[in-house]
Amino acid sequence: MKIRAAYFASLSSSSLAGRDRNIAAVCYDSREVVKDAMYAALIGEKADGYSFIPEAIRNGASVILIDRRHADIISKYTASDVSFIIASDVSRAIARFASLHVLNNKKFTGICVTGSCGKTTTKEMLSSILSVSHSVSKTPGNLNSTLGLPLALLTLNASSEYAVFEMGVDHVGEMDILTSVFPPEIALITNIGLSHLEKFGSRRTIAREKGGIFLPQTAGFVLDDEEFLPYFRTVSDRITAVSSPFTDIEFLGLDGIRLSLGKERFVMPTVGLHNIKDASLACAAARSLGIPDSEIARGLSSMKALFGRSRVVREGSLTVIEDCYNASLDSVSDAIATLSNVHWNKNKHIVLGDMKELGIASRYAHRTVGRMLCCADCQYIYLYGSEMEEAYKVLYDNGQKEKAVYTPDFEVLSSSIRKETSHGDLFLLKGSRSMAMERLFDTFKEVG
Image 1 (cartoon, rainbow, N blue to C red):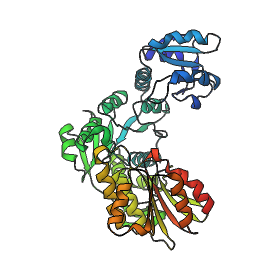
Image 2 (image 1 turned 90 degrees about the vertical axis):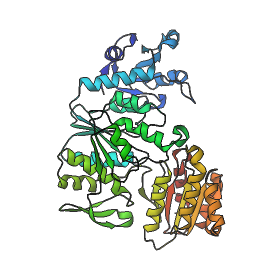
Image 3 (image 1 turned 45 degrees about the vertical axis):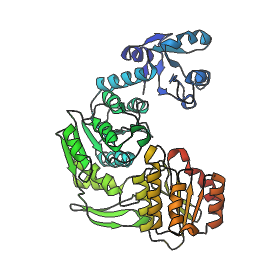
Image 4 (image 1 turned 30 degrees about the vertical axis):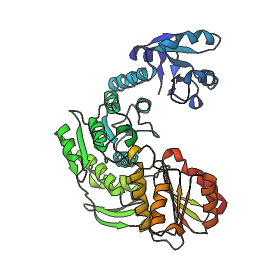
């Protein structure tokens, strides 16, 4: 990205204080500021972005974006070689600029993916397919929120033929904001689960919110077994119900899935049969764009695993299915089934952290996990966090406490894993992002 401060101010209905400068990037986090970046000062739930302006300047920021009500702080930085852009609202200014800037330079087909889980996998699948013979931009990292999407749009390559972005929501009203910033021509909903139920209250509310991705001009794709498909069809008459186009499916354990698509026979390097649903959505969208099956097969077979999303990691003699970016009842169920279906000569361990933001459904969800674990094919189970106690109670009541450890203490968790681990063992690592389950890799390094 390379724009001018005056251009940003004009397009975002803001005012520029100081000389016009180049803006090489836009950052909310002062630690991520690079030379000639614009630092956007936000006041969040845990931090006051204005207190980090000095750090942003030291890290190379040339422009600082602030709210008009904080304009008096400019006088504190008269000795600094930095300009200020003054907006009525920082986040809205970035969203307005990103939307208009993209619209002014639009040469691509816009595709968006939402859902309770599987958004990133589906986005990566479709991006990989389209990239076989087209230029594609996609969501970098996890920039899929009302704050993140505008930043993601600013990374768009001007030559892109397709732009594939995620839209993540956890409050009512956010989808309207996201689609106003980036109205999709094609939209995919992966599923409606229990994610963020604490804030939404019910799955029906989640469906209503995510269904807002279907605008009048949007071609929509939803799996044919989705409970809320009939509702989505009341929102839009351009919904395609998607069934699996794949045949001759062969589960290869940690090596992926061998399958056929028409005349194409290939291996999709994703762990778990549940990935076929995401691949079905990606395939349906690609076919609607005229992408041949040969390119779909090449794209799906060349996917790269991302951090925290069923990535297979070898740590010494240990093998870890690292699936700890986030956790919901659906994704935990899929992960347990995947590990159970993997043939392994040594011990199999399941390590689960709390599933967060489930509200009144938390007890039900964690007890459901407990019932799944009673049937899981594994030798050891470790449950970590205050809410996972419900899963442990189910195991205890069903006479399976001998192979299970429950603790709300991370050090106890780590110590328990050290005690029971042998060379060649397989681990499933799963939990909500706030549980930071990847910290256990230090333990794996010690015992691997």
